Image 1 (cartoon, rainbow, N blue to C red):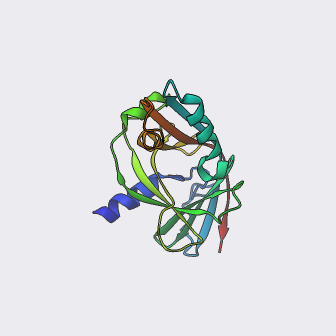
Image 2: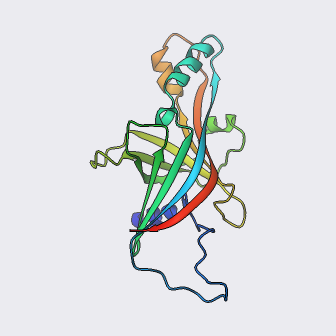
Image 3: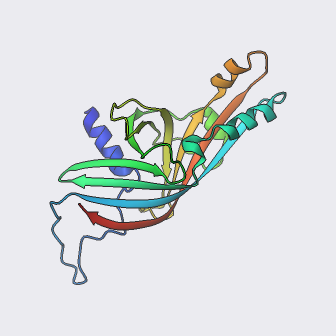
Length: 203
C-alpha cells in the first residue's frame, strides 16, 4: 500500500500528465509507447518567501534566513523525469547551485497542513506531502533536507502555470537559537513556478 501511495504521489508530482507530450498523431491515432528509457526536463523559476512573527528579533531572523536559503538560493530549477518501462525517477537540479549534481525527490508520506503555513497566501489544506531531498551524488539515500510540499494546479490538471511550494516551519529552530526571545512563528517556503517543458530525450 505504501508503494502505491508513493507511486500515485510521484505521478501527481512535478510532471503529472505532461500535457505538452501528447501520445497521438495529427490523425488522432494513438502512438504506442517506446520501451526505451527517456528523460523529460521541465523548467521552473524559484523564489523564496518567509514570514517572521517575532517582534523583538525579526530583523536578525530575517538576515539569518537570507544568509541560508534553500538550494543555495538558486533562481532556476530543472525537474527531470526519467522513465524506463514502468519505473519513474523524479529529480531536481538547481541551476545556480554548483555544489551538487542534483537531488532525488523522495516522498516520505502524506502529512497534515501546518497552521503556521496559513500565514502565507495561496496555501492549501489538502494534498500535503513530506518530501526528503536526497543528493544524487551521495547515492546513500540520506536526505539533506525535508520539506512539506503542495502543488497548485489549474483544473483540469496541467503543469502549465503550475506552482510547487516547498515549505518549512522553522519556529522551533529559532526558539532554540534565541531562547530568551518571544518568537511566535517563523515559516519559509520556496515557490517554484512553471516556465516551460523541454524535449523528451531518448537514452
